[in-house]
Image 1 (spheres, helix red, strand yellow):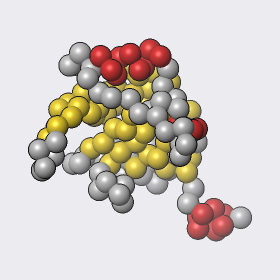
Image 2 (tube, rainbow, N blue to C red):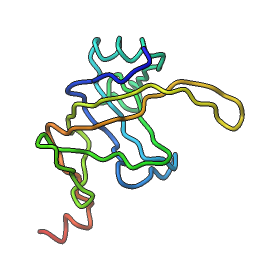
Image 3 (cartoon, rainbow, N blue to C red):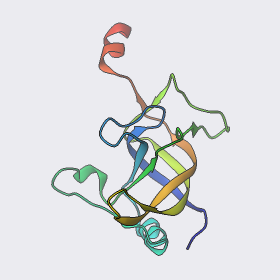
Length: 137
Protein backbone atom coordinates (compact mmCIF):
# COMPACT_ATOMS: atom_id res chain seq x y z
CA UNK A 1 0.00 0.00 0.00
CA UNK A 2 1.57 3.29 -1.03
CA UNK A 3 -1.32 5.71 -1.18
CA UNK A 4 -3.35 7.75 1.25
CA UNK A 5 -5.66 5.82 3.59
CA UNK A 6 -8.00 6.65 6.45
CA UNK A 7 -7.76 5.66 10.10
CA UNK A 8 -11.14 6.33 11.75
CA UNK A 9 -11.72 7.13 15.40
CA UNK A 10 -8.12 6.97 16.64
CA UNK A 11 -7.08 8.34 20.02
CA UNK A 12 -4.49 11.13 20.04
CA UNK A 13 -1.63 11.43 22.53
CA UNK A 14 1.15 14.00 22.85
CA UNK A 15 -0.05 16.22 20.00
CA UNK A 16 2.55 18.79 19.01
CA UNK A 17 0.58 20.19 16.11
CA UNK A 18 1.55 23.88 16.13
CA UNK A 19 4.85 23.72 17.98
CA UNK A 20 7.73 21.30 17.60
CA UNK A 21 8.27 18.50 20.08
CA UNK A 22 11.31 19.41 22.19
CA UNK A 23 12.84 15.93 21.92
CA UNK A 24 12.41 15.26 18.19
CA UNK A 25 12.35 18.84 16.90
CA UNK A 26 9.33 17.91 14.75
CA UNK A 27 5.59 18.47 14.65
CA UNK A 28 4.09 15.15 15.72
CA UNK A 29 1.24 13.19 17.27
CA UNK A 30 0.82 9.60 18.46
CA UNK A 31 -2.18 7.73 17.02
CA UNK A 32 -3.06 5.35 19.87
CA UNK A 33 -5.19 2.40 20.93
CA UNK A 34 -5.23 1.22 17.34
CA UNK A 35 -7.80 -1.39 16.40
CA UNK A 36 -6.86 -4.64 14.61
CA UNK A 37 -8.14 -3.04 11.37
CA UNK A 38 -5.92 0.02 11.90
CA UNK A 39 -2.92 -2.20 12.62
CA UNK A 40 -3.49 -4.29 9.50
CA UNK A 41 -3.76 -1.22 7.24
CA UNK A 42 -0.65 0.41 8.75
CA UNK A 43 1.45 -2.76 8.59
CA UNK A 44 0.40 -3.31 4.95
CA UNK A 45 1.90 0.11 4.20
CA UNK A 46 5.26 -1.07 5.58
CA UNK A 47 5.13 1.00 8.78
CA UNK A 48 5.84 -0.68 12.13
CA UNK A 49 3.42 -0.47 15.07
CA UNK A 50 4.70 0.19 18.59
CA UNK A 51 3.50 -0.65 22.08
CA UNK A 52 5.05 0.03 25.45
CA UNK A 53 3.07 -1.67 28.19
CA UNK A 54 5.56 -0.65 30.89
CA UNK A 55 5.84 3.09 30.22
CA UNK A 56 2.71 3.90 28.20
CA UNK A 57 0.04 1.24 28.82
CA UNK A 58 -2.76 3.78 28.21
CA UNK A 59 -1.63 4.14 24.58
CA UNK A 60 -2.02 0.48 23.58
CA UNK A 61 -0.72 -0.14 20.07
CA UNK A 62 0.36 3.15 18.50
CA UNK A 63 2.26 4.86 15.71
CA UNK A 64 3.90 8.30 15.81
CA UNK A 65 3.29 10.60 12.85
CA UNK A 66 5.88 13.36 12.36
CA UNK A 67 6.51 16.31 10.09
CA UNK A 68 9.84 18.10 10.01
CA UNK A 69 8.60 21.00 7.88
CA UNK A 70 4.89 21.58 8.33
CA UNK A 71 2.52 22.12 11.22
CA UNK A 72 -0.21 19.50 11.50
CA UNK A 73 -3.41 21.52 11.27
CA UNK A 74 -6.34 19.94 13.12
CA UNK A 75 -9.84 20.51 11.75
CA UNK A 76 -13.22 20.12 13.42
CA UNK A 77 -16.09 18.16 11.84
CA UNK A 78 -17.34 21.36 10.13
CA UNK A 79 -14.01 21.79 8.35
CA UNK A 80 -12.81 24.73 10.45
CA UNK A 81 -9.23 24.81 11.70
CA UNK A 82 -8.84 24.25 15.46
CA UNK A 83 -6.23 26.44 17.11
CA UNK A 84 -3.55 27.45 17.49
CA UNK A 85 -5.16 29.17 20.50
CA UNK A 86 -7.11 25.97 21.29
CA UNK A 87 -4.78 23.03 21.92
CA UNK A 88 -5.75 19.45 21.14
CA UNK A 89 -5.02 17.31 24.21
CA UNK A 90 -4.44 13.67 25.10
CA UNK A 91 -7.52 11.51 24.72
CA UNK A 92 -8.96 13.51 21.84
CA UNK A 93 -10.33 11.34 19.05
CA UNK A 94 -9.91 11.92 15.33
CA UNK A 95 -10.33 10.60 11.82
CA UNK A 96 -6.94 10.80 10.16
CA UNK A 97 -5.87 10.57 6.53
CA UNK A 98 -2.30 9.25 6.45
CA UNK A 99 0.29 8.52 3.78
CA UNK A 100 3.31 6.26 4.20
CA UNK A 101 6.72 7.57 3.17
CA UNK A 102 10.26 6.22 3.24
CA UNK A 103 13.15 8.03 4.89
CA UNK A 104 16.91 7.77 5.40
CA UNK A 105 18.60 9.51 8.33
CA UNK A 106 22.10 11.07 8.22
CA UNK A 107 23.69 7.86 9.54
CA UNK A 108 22.17 5.82 6.69
CA UNK A 109 19.40 4.14 8.71
CA UNK A 110 16.24 3.66 6.62
CA UNK A 111 12.60 3.18 7.49
CA UNK A 112 8.95 3.84 6.75
CA UNK A 113 6.72 6.29 8.59
CA UNK A 114 3.26 7.81 8.28
CA UNK A 115 2.67 11.42 7.40
CA UNK A 116 -0.64 13.10 8.15
CA UNK A 117 -2.54 14.39 5.14
CA UNK A 118 -5.56 15.56 7.16
CA UNK A 119 -6.60 15.32 10.82
CA UNK A 120 -10.26 15.84 11.73
CA UNK A 121 -10.92 15.96 15.47
CA UNK A 122 -14.22 14.25 16.27
CA UNK A 123 -14.02 14.48 20.09
CA UNK A 124 -11.88 17.32 21.43
CA UNK A 125 -10.24 17.11 24.85
CA UNK A 126 -8.71 20.56 25.06
CA UNK A 127 -5.27 20.84 26.64
CA UNK A 128 -4.99 23.81 29.00
CA UNK A 129 -1.47 24.45 30.33
CA UNK A 130 -1.34 24.68 34.14
CA UNK A 131 -0.47 28.40 34.21
CA UNK A 132 -3.56 29.23 32.11
CA UNK A 133 -5.72 26.89 34.18
CA UNK A 134 -4.83 28.81 37.37
CA UNK A 135 -5.60 32.17 35.71
CA UNK A 136 -9.14 31.06 34.84
CA UNK A 137 -10.00 29.95 38.39
